[in-house]
Image 1: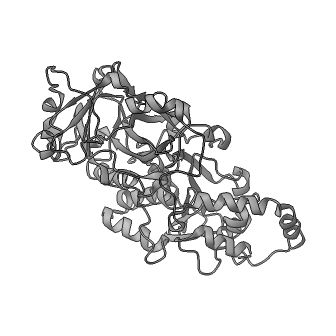
Image 2: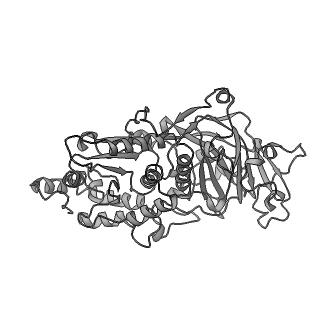
Image 3: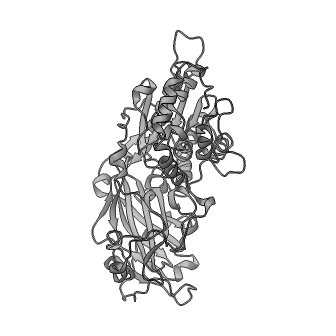
Length: 502
């Protein structure tokens, strides 16, 4: 029964042929796995920690160590893996704070290269896991292959997909922002492995063909990446509309505020040299563009920026429904390198992206109805950092990292942190819509009904996330946990290590 449940939860991921554990060898020295658990009911459908450790002990002796990336908590204690574990947590479905990348890769490299003088060879392995052993683990596995093994990004991504996924079940690393981070790792490798983490100010957002009822906010990492913090939510007072919306096919849905005749902002012109495909020369530039300028400075502590979108529409029965959810992460250090990707980053720049390339709900491609056509974000390095001769903190994996690993994440406190990953296409309570930048939402907020089952978009069985499966499994398994535990104790006699697939 438990083996069957593990197969369901593993879903599209390949399992180890001999042990039926949810793991794979990306290379002979890199093992990727889903997060093991030592407690019920999780161990009934995840890798049981005791079986997992026996597998590692049997095949690798003491030459293994774990790198885990779970901001939601590891699911076991360090002592249960002989304290051979390194914690670098960040939230699920998101890329890592890039300042962690050089440190993680340096730790991995140093572990693999450190030789035991008592042994003739060096057979050390690194074990990486997040929750599913896919997105976060794949991002770091591919980054290691690129930076330390000389692989091309396409080769690294293809290898991870080949080893981690069942044929025909999609990519191993599939979230657009995580794929962007793999590209950043390639840039970082090709330009001396130096990274400057700087405070960044968001100057202006330009959104082409913005639909009604869209809330836009700026987010970033805090606590070394363990949590995502909301730094600014744009309001109607910070918004103006320019361009001709008469040609827009969706003009009835676009933001309908009459533009005041003010002097047009020259920020986009000032930074246009850093735009990959200039918004000024594109056909979209002549159409409806909504400009957001924060009324006070919006300064983020690192170069990692997340722009989050949520659209609400009023249903025919009076409920306010969330019909669109999307976000995008980018790093200003790498986006500021310019078209030629020179080693010296710029102090300002523009990041552009189209709706179809945004991240969807919980790492999927599902975003709901189109909320806009294109986004441009104008940013600059803060004055306080510009005056620093070093321009920020330079991190390199060429030397032993001096940055200590991050304390293990507390699952309870992390669960309380608001994050884009917690959103769904459904109804919203009043507290979440009261500060929306849309006038339509302000008119509707007192009419919101607290219902969950009548959203405009429902999840088909093929789109159902693993989180939903786990939720139902937990309910069914919790009542049988004590029985399973007793059975486990009665059958505690040693079995061949790594071969217990019950």
